[in-house]
Image 1 (cartoon, rainbow, N blue to C red):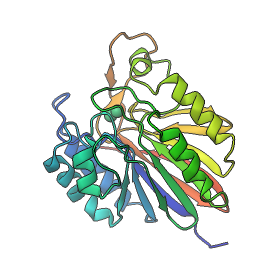
Image 2: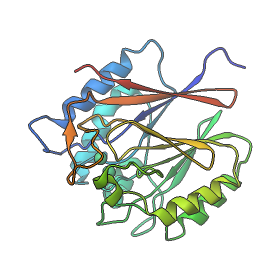
Image 3: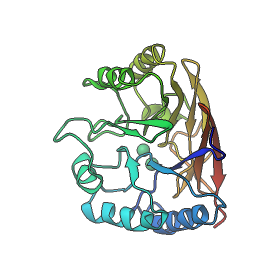
Image 4: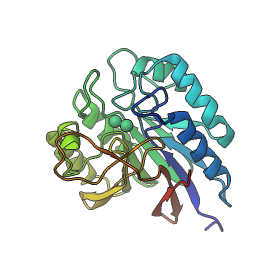
Length: 255
Ligand SMILES: [Fe+2]
Ligand SMILES: [Fe+2]
């Protein structure tokens, strides 16, 4: 047992290039990076859980890399519905080409990070069709010993927020994911973004966690017909692993 936990940093929904209101998404990411650098401990690895950019241009991805660079960590990224696989692959060296999903595995020593591509190109909602469930089952089967986290952009949960239900992960994909998890007890957590707020739920006995955006946050409203953004602060998460046990801390940022 080492004397320090392994720390996985999660940043989500940076949305560089977005102009949803008068605020600048670059300011949010800059504030997040500054807050992370001000922590007393440095994270060991970095996950960016989708919607890195608003338009998927190479210039926006280059800017994401520039703004993350002070962290000194290679970003492990997954596409969100606002990303484009081609330019994302180019910028971050992801596998696959064309319409293939960009899922991949990062072996981080004490933690295995499975990055699962949940997007449907051209759509806002997500799915795990097209061989992705089979890919996940095989990827998890390749190492059943190491503590594993599965990260995806679209969270496998019901938010009960109407807009997010319309653009969520397909229910049949959630069911198929649950079945795969049943065969892989080494998966201790499911991490996601997309909903721009923190939500905790459960799937196949594992906690499902969504983390805040570094840009704008979704308001708590279970009936609004359109998505409402609230005034909550942006945030990020630090997942602390020791001896196979993971504690997920969500940290808001004072801007
Ligand atoms: Fe987003
Ligand atoms: Fe999204």
